[in-house]
Length: 163
Length: 414
Ligand SMILES: Cc1ncc(COP(=O)(O)O)c(C=O)c1O
Image (cartoon, rainbow over all chains, first blue to last red; front, side):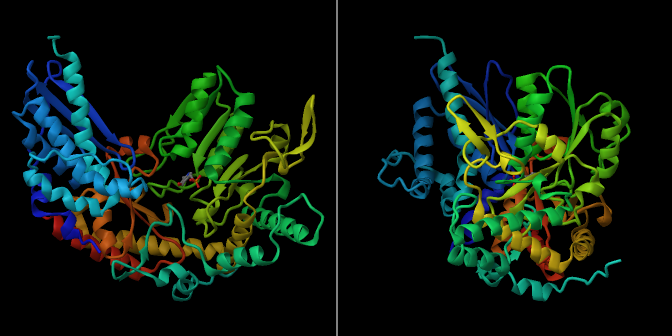
């Protein structure tokens, strides 16, 4: 039986108590994207400053929610700052692969191709969130900010000057 | 005057099989009855016995077990009529839950009687079940919606009632708020509504499980309730409404059972109450609900209410004493002004985390917006934790909650 220590690792609590990159960026020029978890009311707002070549120059997080959604957003913000759009997308895929293993078993669609983690991507601190998969209802908390980030990257790419 | 015998909770607990199980190696401390209540053995046995002996579809066949099934189903309706003190069982419509009961009023009565220029008065503390059907109606028909605000103590703010109620056609209000626990002044609002020429719909989802309910004394016109919160099975609830209103209302869901005659060039609806019960109804669930009503009648609803007041009072007192400034409890401070619902926010621990940590000690509380997002916005919180008590809870359950809260506090301490 999974215990609370699987869920609430010290590093998670640390990011919850001292969230990194908390705040807002003027949008525009930054891209502002909101993510909601209608089930529990958690919300995350991601502000992305993406350079013309697609690098995440700066990121800020606001919103409110539980320790899992907020710490996941905080760790995510530290992990993506300064990375290229491709690197960030690879990180999103790897993180979601870690989270989705259980999600897929839950809805009985095991045969479905799971999201493939990117071999070279290191999750680092984010691995602390692995325990969340043992608490299926909380997976959505952990992935909320990542889905929001992915949407933000799409919007930034759409707005980027052509060529 | 009936004498109220206090509830013997130790004995009552034994009637609920689920309370014998453990969860995370702890006894089950179920404090989420406002969400859905547990079921006593009497309800399970009634449903099982019915299936084993008399199950058949109702109102359709002449063989013996079909007649028994029809009698059992209609017997449940009569039990519910008695429980609500409704004048006639023709006025007791079974639906699948309170939500469907309210939708019945919105789709049948309101769509045919209201349009642009008409107004409905609701309150800021309504459950989505008594909000969304009216938001939809506003979009479709241009009906104006007004909202009674709430005070900081979680009561309806009646200062502007006369102005707000003037000219409305319908007042919709929860008998008891599922978030704040507030018992609303239904009778007073009913009188005011009638003076203004309006009807009143009471959302009784939280009221009927906890209060002696008398739809005539409440003075309401429509009253929705739900079975799964009053010890009955899920899948059955209903609407009570005055017969003259129901008679004049067009059918809502249509098909078999609700029909008297069908020709290829037209149809005639069945008489009340079946006119509003399309298709095969929740027959087994009705039998379970009837048994739940009898179980509650056996305890006595005055005693149930008294138990709520005492246990809620104990919870409010101990939560405040033990957790002091760390806990913020929403809703009326006076136990007599509320049902068995306590919503709270705990310093530094998000309700979602709180509920997860409590679960490890076997304590089940709900965390979230409780299907009342406008109220959450008014309270300026994203979510609350909510503990709610019922007939099978005692002080030891509240103590377990208090201890589990201490543990959450330790875990999340800065
Ligand atoms: C006040 C209130 N109204 C309506 C409902 C809806 O009940 P149901 O989901 O059974 O239709 C609930 C329960 O969730 C409630 O608490």
